[in-house]
Amino acid sequence: MLRRVLLIGMLMLTTTSCSSASDDVTPHVVLGIHGGIGEDKKDMTPELEAKVRAGLNAALKAGKAKLDAGGSSLDAVESAIRSMEDDPVFNAGKGAVFTHEGRNELDASIMDGKTKKAGSVASVMIIKNPITAARAVMEKSKHVMLIGRGAEIFATKQDLEIVDPSYFWTEHQWKRIQEIWKREADGKQAKADLPAEQVPQIDASRFGTVGAVAIDKSGNLAAGTSTGGMTNKMQGRLGDSPIIGAGTYADNDAAAISCTGHGEFFIRYAVSHDIVAQIKYKKVSAKDAAEDVINKQLKDAGGEGAAIVLDKSGQFTTARNTEGMYRGWISSDGTIQVRIYDK
Image (cartoon, rainbow, N blue to C red):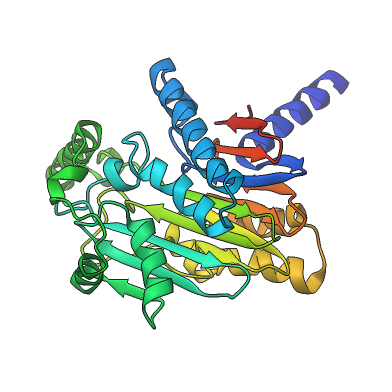
C-alpha cells in the first residue's frame, strides 16, 4: 500500500513539473530573450533544436553587442528581436505563420521603462522588421499603435525597409497551414457523415512569438515583442504582442516583461502589466509575481503561455505553464544560457 502511495505521489509530481515550470532567478543578466513556446518534445528533431539554439545565441550576441558599444536597453531589445525576425526558424518576420486566408500578418511592440513611452504596429505585411517600425511609432509619432496600411505608409515615410509580402513565405509554415486546411475540410465532411465522437479533431496551433528584455548601464529597462500571430487566425484577429500591458511592458521601478502564448488570455488578464504591478505595489519578487500570473491565474483560466522577466536589479527569471519555451539570457560578463524545455 505504501509503495502504491509513493508511486502515485511521484506521478503527480512529474505531471505538475511538465505543466508548470520556471527558471531559477539568475543575477547580473543584461538581456533575456524568448522565441515562443515552440514545438512539443515529441515533435522536436535534432536539426530543429540546433537551429533554435543557434538562433537564440545569435540574438543574444546581437543585443549584447549594442550594450557593449554603449547602446541603450532599447537598442539591445530591438537588435535581438530583429535577429530573430530575420531567422525563419521563429514565428516572427521571415518565419511568420499563415492566416486562414493564406497571408503573413505581423505584429510588434516595444516599451521604454524610463519614460513609459511605447510603440506598436499590427497586421502589417510589407515591413521587413516590425520591431523597428514599432520603435519608430514610439519615437517619431504622437501615437502608440498603428495598424495595417496606415502603419505601412508610416514605415515607408520613415525609410524603413519594405519588402514584397512573398519575402515572409517559408516552406515549413506553408505546409503547416495546408495541413490545417485539409483537416478542416475533412472535418466538415466528417460532420456530415459521422457521429460527433468520430469527427476528426483539429488540434490547436502552437503559439509562437519572439521577445526581449534588457537593462543598460544607466539602469534603464526596455521590453519588446514581435510575432506572426496564431496559425490559421481569422481575418482581423490581433493577439497580445502589439498590446502594451498584455504582451509587453517595462517600468524602471519594477521590471521588463515579454510574453508568449494564447494572446486572448494575455489580453484579458493584462499579463505583463499585472506582473509589473505585483512587483511594484505588492513588493513581491519577480519570480513570485510571474509564477502567480502565469501558473495560477492564467493556468486556472485555461490560458497557455509563458513570460520572461528582468527586474530593475538585473535578476532574470521565466515562468511557463507549457512543456517548453525557446529562451535564453546573457549576463554582464558575456555568459550565455540557452534552454528549450528544462535545459
